[in-house]
Image (tube, rainbow, N blue to C red; front, side, top):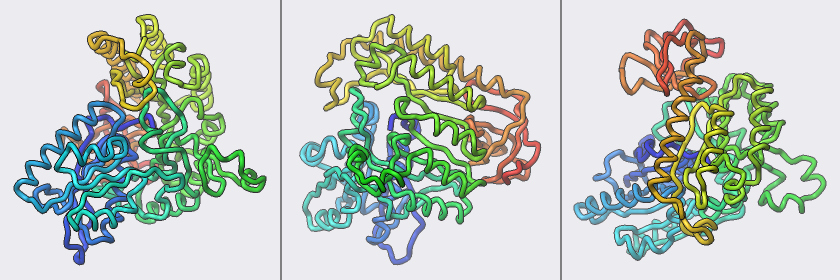
Length: 481
């Protein structure tokens, strides 16, 4: 999954409804992509059956788990700082056990146990069902590790616990792993090969969310457009499937259509898309259903054909433009966001200017921009010299950020004076007297609370905006309410 949660949104401890029969306390933090937050809900569900209630108080925990991200160096540094904090608490509470989950766990494996003496447990993304056995090992005084990558596991048979949920929106994982070997990315090494989840289990999970009055679901995958269910197995083995399996296979467009048709009052989002895998039928399904949000996260990484080739991105600049043109033709109101890496090995000033010119063509609604950081084990780390000076990376990143801010403001300015539908999610961070919610295009809006409540669909007249937020006033409920 290329799209990651902005790394400023991190480390929120997750809380499970307390069960009286559970005696042990679990403190769990998640960093990185939405998949990690979804996985933490699976972990909490598994451990609830093993006698664990969750707590927000680190000092009270019997077991502390941190769900980690390896996509960028900054994320790993944050986790290491948290381990230092855990170590300080463990000196006061020596009975506390500490575990590392997720992508760092898979990548660093036993190194955590050898160098980070505080760590008792290391569990990779495909091994969470083994947690009860691993915790038994830890309870017996032995360190425990399981980072084996699976060819089948999708956790489709586990009902996730909605941790710290607002009761409005939820994540539903539909695929795991990735087959796209981008030279800068660790995901194929930390999460394994691409495999899809049984559509029936996806529909059942969404049925349950709808029954509990959730209003929005985001379908998750490292690459959602590659979803392909033909009875189980890796996507790469589809060519070996029987004629019947091929005839009855469900791709992402069909899955999206099935969910939208069954739950017309439920808002649907999805992330992340890969330009080389997004097809016209997905865009047409989005246009067909009003309840599918008109927003696509479509990472480009670079606007230079030469750099795209070095990154092993299997599309060109022109092919990306054609996809953008098709999206705008079929869904004129669709918002688009990006991932861009500044300073990839061998990037020249001309390559950088290609990125800026591509941004000018698309005028993204918003984006996730980062300076290149070498990730151990990737082809770029093994075969390419990180030869762009840090000061050049930072200067180019600053130019990309500045241009994106201007485009974000341009897109939001176009909504001033219009009335848009907002799903209320929470109170505004800056004012207890205002609600915060999002449009179908994923833009954040704030407006006075009045008599509305979280979970309401409200029509809001937009009176003003900043570069990141719409500001308005509610004029009534929407027809979806």
